[in-house]
Structure formats: C-alpha cells, structure tokens
Length: 174
Image (cartoon, rainbow, N blue to C red):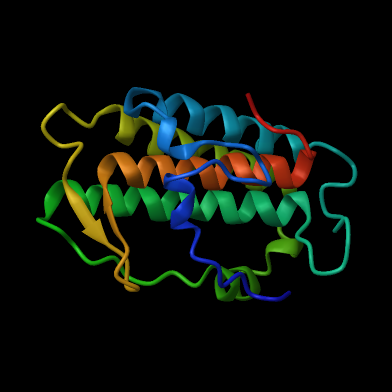
C-alpha cells in the first residue's frame, strides 16, 4: 500500500470532494450520533462475503477500513481524554499505515473486528457526548503542528469515518 501523506485538516473548511461530507458544518452535539451511524455502516459491511476483498490493488478491503476505523476510534477517544485532562496537549504521532501492516489488518477476523469496532465507537461517542459546555474550546496539537479544539477534533474524526463509509460503499452518507 502507498502511505496516505495528505494533510486532511482542510476538510474542516470545505466539503470533501470525494465523500461530500462537510465536517466544519457538523454541530458539536451531533458528533457522537454521526460517529455511531458511520461505525454501524462499516460494522454491518463486515458481514458481507467480500469483506476481505480489496476492490483494486492498493485499495484497502472493507475489513482493513474497519480495522483502521476501530483503531481511529481508540486514538481519537484517547486524544479527547488528553484534551480534557491537560492544557493543550501534544498528541503522540500515529502512523496508520505502519499500524495496518504491524497488525495485519487484512488477516483479522471480520466478526471479531465488527464487535471491537462497535465497542470502540460507542466509547468514543459516549466520551464526545459527555463533553460539557465549557470544554468544547479546549485545544490540543498533532506532532505536525495542526491544532484542534475539541469541536474540530470531533468534526475531523467524523469525516474520517464518513469518508471510509464512502470508501467501502461508494455512497455518500446522509
């Protein structure tokens, strides 16, 4: 696989031309709901017979996208916790491509991954749903210097999941 080196933070300012999602328009109170909606679609896709099949060379299978999404749920939930506990934390770098290789995403059991994904998404959604009024503007930074508020972190995160729904279904998510 060719590593994805794009800086996707631009999705906070304009609609994604691929999946159509407008992350910056997502209201903070809808973050948890949209997270679960996307996670459920990805989880359900794992029941299909072709869940392990890559649609083209260099494109992840639905299983690999689901593994990535499961791990993203855990990473973003941890980042949210850091932002709630610490004044402007710096996030540890996460190399998603190295993780996919090291964890052999394509070899994992779709049934197990479906359960893990759903559990991780529920935890992340619950954590975002629990953010109180005075915490949404708290900030944190990635290792590349990109700074997020809790709101923009949630919007960015939801775009990742919605985009992966588009990756595996070819359909924009309403």
